Image (spheres, rainbow, N blue to C red):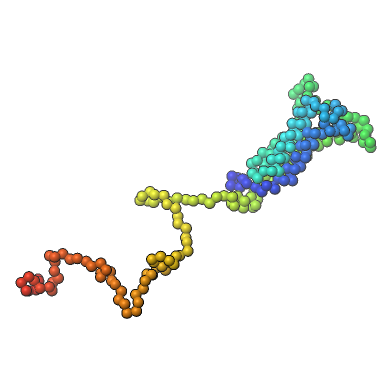
Length: 244
């Protein structure tokens, strides 16, 4: 997974925006709901209680921050972390109330009670059901769904991810130590044969003998010296005779 850790930034765009909106709604609904007579007690807008802090603001902030990470990241691990954080917030929207009721028995942390009574065409029972669904249970289920969708998208390795990883991977340079001197050299890069210089790239000499001109042999260029004590067999000896 390390090779394909980078992903397109648009991978979690839609799910991230949905998580941001759901997290903002879950954290602000108890404070703005009284404007529409759709709230839990206390029936006052922007009234702060410890129950609204732990049961609405905290899970809403977790879903919102997770949505920001999902929507803006280009790294797979960061997106998975954001999806997991949002999923925890959604689960706390659903299970936070019963868990707090069991853990804190003195009732100091409580979501309150939903407003009852008929509201327009809604009966009292329907109103209570929709308030619980909109503030806690329904919001948590939607957040969990979007978070699971984001985690699924971030966990899948597609062809675009592989192409992006290959494009971002730097070229590797390998050094080759010389077996004798142990000097580190680098493999040469083939280049275009040069036509300039003392010798042409085709392997022939730059200068060719003209017509009728004798080419100088290696023996004439570099004459060899012989020992004065050695003479050829056919050379005359010191007394006028031939050497033996």
